[in-house]
Image (cartoon, rainbow, N blue to C red):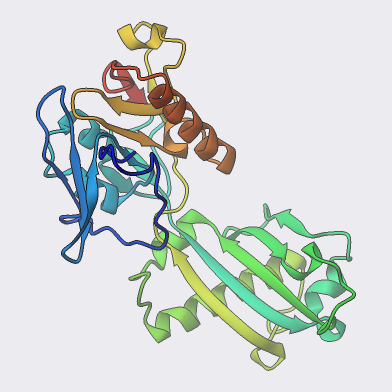
Length: 286
């Protein structure tokens, strides 16, 4: 929400990258918050409220030089494929590899095993993989290139941790290694002979490392904390003194619905002009 009275209440700017190093700056005072947002030397304006709808290293860095210390402490992130039974001390994100391959339907070994009614499936018999989904089966099949099918494989977090690399610039050797291992894992899962899905039948392929993927723990307030008695507590963070909040699935439920509901709860808190901080103390990762 822009603090200038002569402007419209909201102005949406899309595809704008804000540097995690110096993209936001607190220019207000305690209980009279104001934030400056900028990138590449261009200032976007001054705002009374700031929302961090992100997690991982960028969110950590974005808040690291601000006075919102309590909120920043919860944005610090650990990357692992598991967490202790008690939840751990930090937000923990896993990593997942995504491999997409295009095949001709009439020669696809996958279609020979999985009939057309199967669009997506969890993989429980192969430690390399966790999900298999056919992108082309999600749409009307009566269209051009009907003989092409596109499959996406999602790896296990343990596999991605073992073969992790710089996600923006994966070395060619790592891409080929991950592709081979994930296809071999798919062949084992489907009971196919090794080499059944060979390079000669793959029309196109793409590997992507999702470095900060799914939260493995969730920040939750203790039942006996002071702010837990609020009818809107839980599912988001808000630092009233500094005018900054955070929302995301790591604050409610690691899922798309969890992300949406977290953002809805925070926006409702804003709309009611509440001046009370939420979720910053009396909680733990679980």
